[in-house]
Length: 254
Image 1 (cartoon, rainbow, N blue to C red):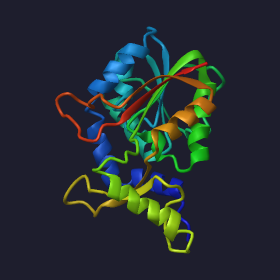
Image 2 (image 1 turned 60 degrees about the vertical axis):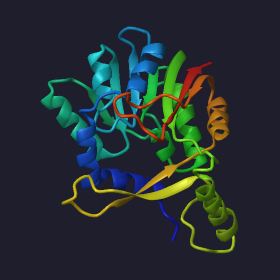
Image 3 (image 1 turned 60 degrees about the horizontal axis):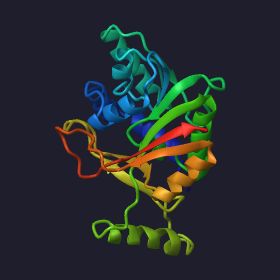
């Protein structure tokens, strides 16, 4: 039976382990790299921002505190419920809504800026759906509006060569022969997310797509954006360096 990856994503992030983890993440605030790019490109004071895949508010809260008007959306109702609780406890008035990035419930040219943090765009299953999300963001942005999102990029380096060779063989050789391969596109990954609390239930399965950089750039250009910067060298946090850096894509509506 074919896996419903969208349902898998929603169910995984609705689970208790994920909610415990993201409630903790809400207190972490912006990565140093996010702070850098937002300062560089979100320059209009009191601008309107759509925070897509906002989770429990890790990026939403600091942007609101900086004076922006922010709407946070997430496809997982449990995330929005906890985001509202966290905002209430901190006496913050934040507009959080359940929403699907591929079908944004906003009028054309509603926002100055938009972001999709924490590789959320690559957790949208299917190339067509990821392109739809980009097109939708472009639609709801004002002319010259800025969009910032991140992705882990597929790298055929010595460190990952044999992993991706195995994935290539699974998808292009074994799947056509009828083997039960769950991935629907080359670059799809299913992996186990460890429990947030050792006392809690076992790890859960998580989906993400690891694209080639050219794949992402082609989708951006098809959607109506121009690419201002592609940067995969910025640490998430200078105090907690990461070995697996996400790539930032800085886009502007044409």
